[in-house]
Length: 215
Image 1 (cartoon, rainbow, N blue to C red):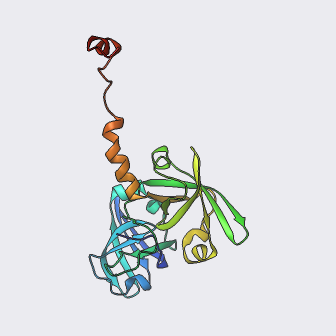
Image 2 (spheres, one colour):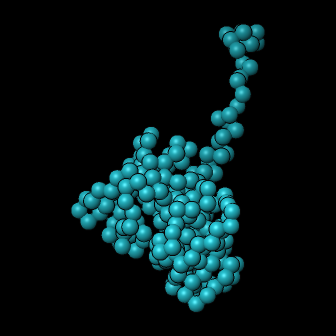
Image 3 (tube, rainbow, N blue to C red):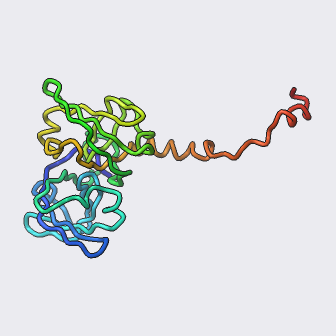
């Protein structure tokens, strides 16, 4: 589990692809402290397992499903990425519950400064937008952010200078793809209600009610 509080910005050192799968080698510093092979590190919000460690970098395998469902397939050598280690049991919960299992990708529509803040407006698939609520939480490339505005077609967040300066958001531009993960609590609620929403057509008709004396 992660919190969406990015610990550092890393850099892609090497990309190896073997058919639909591959490996990423990432230069890092902070997230390597205390990290062992088998540990989890969120890379742009995607939970990856450390398969090897080498000095100032770590390597992780990436499955075909991960490439298809995330923007990791767009990375190139030299690309910068948000990094966060899994939350320790005695750690502070600074963001919100982030699983590292993204729901899909969104696209940055516009970036507009407002004083010291910057507004990012993003489009997203309908199934993701349906799980977003105003003033709720969403993870964008692994960053825990508060939704400031939501419509049927897009949503917006307002970024403070600290967030822009300590994540890769300041490197983004309109048209860029980002990884999105909805609030997991909202997803569970949505799933629990789904059977009720998908009930078959009711057999209770006007004739049925009249037959039993209700009309």
